[in-house]
Length: 307
Ligand code: ATP
Image (cartoon, rainbow, N blue to C red; front, side):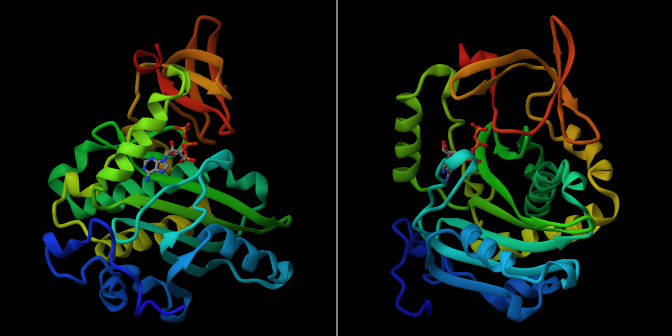
């Protein structure tokens, strides 16, 4: 699909700057950091169901024993008709206001060696956004396992899926959705959905990058994100999560706060969130002692918000 006739976004940039600056400028993105991705491996499409689904299908078709480690493809879409979050939840975004892309790569590690990959991805996304707005970097934080927050609200979501793994390598697809510009209609929709949910299960309200960086745009955001993700993939491939632990803990949104872990509306554990360990488990100080929570399907909430 070409992007020539694609309609402009609802909250397009006509009011904010150049009329076409809601589009991704491939060459500027490559010059700004995405040049680590070969040009033919960077795909930008108008619409697809889910960029993660597309790249998962492609990675599953690769001959497992013969593929080289590294980034194989990046696919960004202005609109996803079935954008996905964890556990079958949906990721919603409107064209031009959000950056949604997936990166497919092969890591020289078996499945067990991928522990902490989703947290390392969160670190890479935070660090890339911090580079765009150094003066505002302290407003960014990570909610375990990998939500990126701005002023305590959800700025970006990450979905990692494994296409296959062997004794020495794994093919994964890393999906990232970043709210670049505010979309008040979407915010209202997300907040209405959250208000209808039980307090324990209520979603973190959304934020957009433009709230901290008024000139935020898709091109520069994609450029810094791809640079940071490529570096992270290489480092994680060699060392695993270990080099990212301190940085994750330094960005921990709920450090030393009381939190509750929820699975399908049911409370699983409650305690003080002290940080993460070398495999990305959340360390929870509870009445029964320290508990390490593995990244699974649970959701984390602040007790102040859940009560
Ligand atoms: P939890 O906070 O329960 O752990 P999660 O991290 O599993 O959530 P994701 O899978 O990352 O959540 O994202 C899906 C959820 O994010 C949706 O259920 C919805 O509440 C919320 N959401 C969807 N689209 C957006 C968006 N553009 N901005 C912020 N939040 C969104």
